[in-house]
Amino acid sequence: MMLGIDWLTENRCKWHFVERQVEIKGQMIPLRNRRFLAGVRRVRVAEDVCVPPGTQVDVPRETHT
Image (cartoon, rainbow, N blue to C red; front, side):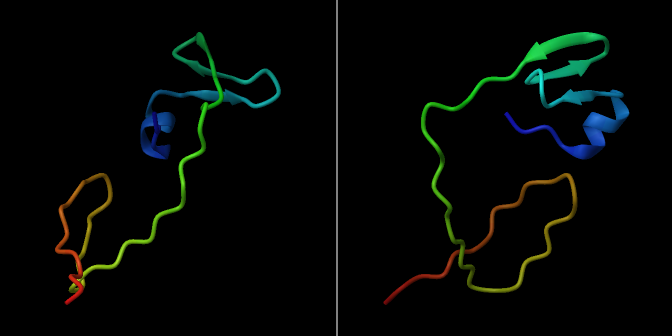
C-alpha cells in the first residue's frame, strides 16, 4: 500500500521508523517487509502527457516495430 503525503498530513499521521509503525488517528499500525522487492520499471510513452497530482491516467505507450 502507498500512502500519499496529502493523505498522511490530512489525517495527522505519525511515522515511527524505529518502532516500524505508523500512527493513524491514534491507532498504531505495524509495518511489514515485502517478501519480494519490486523491480524498477522504465516507462516510455509515445507522446507528452500531463498527469495532474492525485490522479491516475492511462498513457499511450511507445510501440516497437
